[in-house]
Image (tube, rainbow, N blue to C red; front, side, top):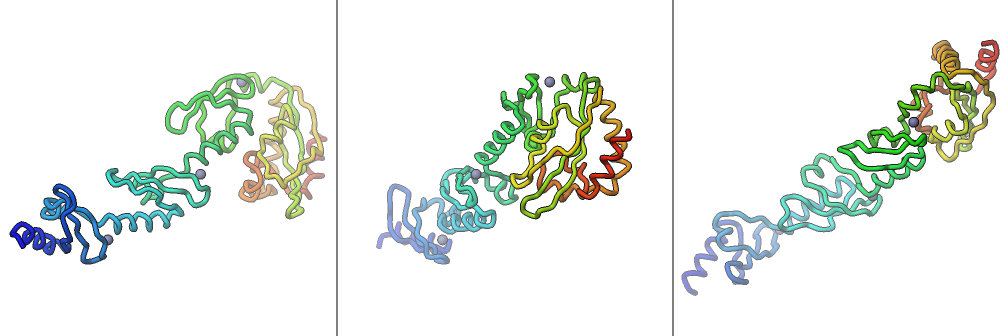
Length: 274
Ligand SMILES: [Zn+2]
Ligand SMILES: [Zn+2]
Ligand SMILES: [Zn+2]
């Protein structure tokens, strides 16, 4: 055995490796004594200790991925921490940075974009363009454009300031809508005001198993007049309201103004005398 390979063998031994054979150029094949995996490593990197077992490293990433309900699909050799993962729940794949993975700071971009599009459609918004971070420019149902954050669009929480300015002086309706949960067979009453009740009901974003029926409506000459009565009733009966947390399970907007169905007569009476 020549001197050079003696050196390779002893250098390897010092670093917990077993020297196997020469591969190509400065690359040689080694076996890790601890785990038994084999790997091509440059001999100078063996001397400086700049190597790690890729298979073990990959297995560690796989374990970390599993913690977050992901599957590692592509372990990039040269990338400093960006690997490709599959979301077990939806099946989409995405590159995720290792530090973001560790802290769970990621979400499926594909699903998230689908949700965004669905919400925009539900609330009659046209996505014009992405502005920055969470902000987008939309065309509202009235035709005006507005900058709104995506999270607000997801829950349907936005309004047009231009239309709103003239809103108070326009006619409006005070209404009582019965909401019925077909699964639990429970009913509630929702008190609200709207120019167009059907349109407002659509904007509640109700679960598919909730049906609605308009039980009562009263016309007011101005939105402000209807609003005053509505606000008075809500504050007078604030202790009777259904827990918004419960209603939030079924509706995306308007969940804080619901009453038990048994309360219908009382509220209806109040509106009639007003
Ligand atoms: Zn290994
Ligand atoms: Zn997805
Ligand atoms: Zn508008």
